[in-house]
Length: 168
Image: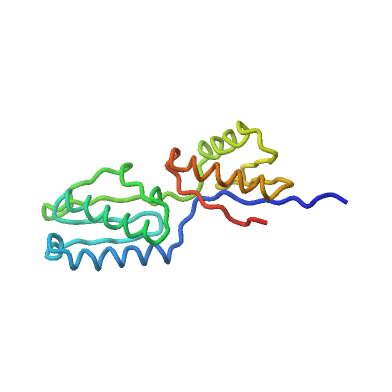
């Protein structure tokens, strides 16, 4: 009788409700902070990005930092927000606007890095790239847990918000 294979998926997603809660907390903090409460600040979440509009680029950066801090406190990855891809731009009325992209899905380059890192460790597992996720299978659940520990260590190096799902 063959041993049952165990597996899990490496994905890059976010919980939309947790993000909404983090943005609501950021709005509440902004409305009570002495240095920010009288400024007209707008935070507009979309499916793949968040647009922050304020009186100056400095205020926009502060708002993004508050939003990131609230998301981290809610257990979200600090690498979810990508505010460096699109620089701040001028908006109407001398205001400043910045679009913060939300990193989701594992692109092919990162998937290959993940697979190569696992192979370099010579662990007794198999990997396969399946669209925007990587499946890791092996005979031992302990081996899979070692892979998860390795990837958690490397995710900050890759600046990728990785999650591990369907562990069975």
